[in-house]
Image (cartoon, rainbow, N blue to C red; front, top):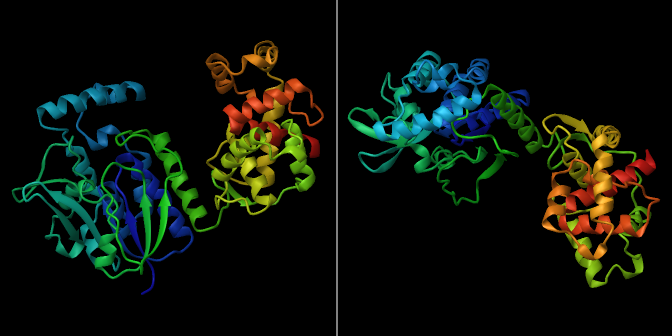
Length: 437
């Protein structure tokens, strides 16, 4: 049977991301013939082999500290911040007294892991743990697990050092992340060449597999997923969405580098005329663009734009527009975790610009810029001024007018280009959009 081997990395509650990946794979009907995982990747992997997506999703969005570790009844009533502070204290004291008690997690897995389903599934399943007793890694496939011990071995794969020592038949085990947190090698053992690996940026060692015959589709979280033991339902839901969208983009259903774009056509006109306009908005004479100081300034902007290009190259003007739009959307604080067309992103940018320019604080910022930055060009950017610009939500929308070629406005843009290239790109992009829409 043709299909992919799915490899899931460890990372505590970051593992919620993997549920979003799974959702995409289901929707796209991508066949999975084997699953391998470490730590939380092994726990998620068990649910995937069972085929229990809805159950896994419900478990994740309802998870709490109480479901994983045994804590005082009073602590369970705390709000999120109090819980995090208390958890830190609990971990410190637990380490001193032998580790966190994960009896609740054992009970949770006991209720939801169906060993019979896993064994009968046609999907291969393996995971990694580390034997402290024998001081060696243990690679376990489902057929190797003694009857009735599936939950025990899954817990062995997820046995963080802060947990109470986990024993099976007199041997102690440690989290498999201390050997291989993304065990692609298990797929090699099963002669599976087409692999999807999911890295959630968890703590641990990742062993590289040198095999040119492998075809690996790599999926990695596009933003921070929180701490290992951050049991926050809203964060979990967000991570699931990020996993879903990242996987959709990996399989080319979305475009874009930072945002998720279903279509990259726009009404923006951009050719040599607009390119020359950008130079003019920076106070650079087109015929003198090769002068060292001008080249350095343009280099700063181009390097930033390339980071937001899907191919890390600007093949044409369309690539430039998409990258500049994504940078501007980020600067303007537009929600990233949803899908857009490029035209929708641009409309969101325009809407946010209209809102921000009417804000009373914008006039205060404009006054500050004029009095503290533009009044004396020799002063440059002091640390204080840099902080004001960096902290301000208005820096990118100051004087976004292509007809304003006053020396003070050009000076402001050049300062942005040197110190905050993303803000400069956003400023110029909004100016061009405003002139065309």
